[in-house]
Length: 154
Image (cartoon, rainbow, N blue to C red; front, side, top):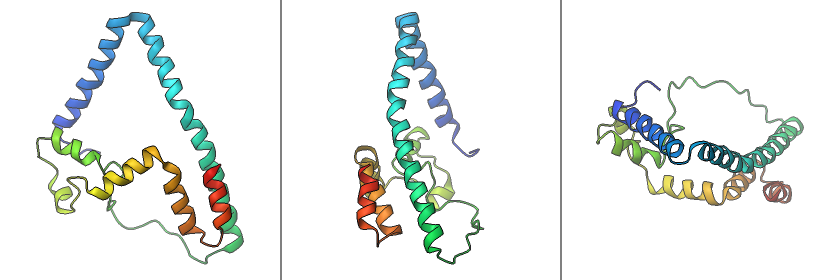
């Protein structure tokens, strides 16, 4: 996006640079190997999660072929998202790093600070993501409660 406050961009650039510099100067090549190992260890669970998501997508597609809802899906004419992808609890960080100078359009839409709903959903998504997945599956396919639970548990 082009409309981020310059203080926010500067904050993240300096923070990332300082962390990388501190790690490399403190430990040299060993620190670099540690960072590389940590990125692999942190990324590995996401590979498994992506495999489960692919299984869910396949299930959705099979069900759509069988049932067929008769709807013609079109791209929305809406120019912006009503809830931005980068929003939620991160709105508080934007508010702090921009010293309260948030884009007026975001304030107008009520997207300048996170709500309790955003915080609760973020925590659920981080610590118990299968709860949200089960809710989506149950809303999309209310008849298949057993298979929804099986896909969520898998």
